[in-house]
Length: 93
Image (cartoon, rainbow, N blue to C red; front, side, top):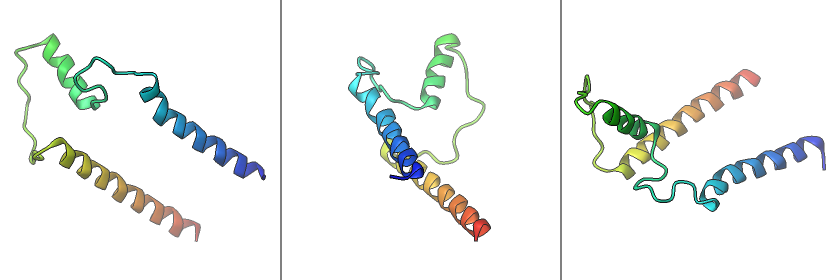
């Protein structure tokens, strides 16, 4: 096995461990939404510190559910990754 193949296998194992360990160790148990995003956590912290806080603006589009919001975020990430991959591929070629 070449050096690059060993590094790739090691990186894949590291990524798998990062995905599985929080679930296996039970991190987030006892919370209503154990793996909520940073936006929700920031909103909860602000509300806790200043209950009378009013947001400056509201979103232009509010998705009907959390699943739709997650799907739109995944689509945005995939499009960004595609653009970057195309750019680096074109640049290398």
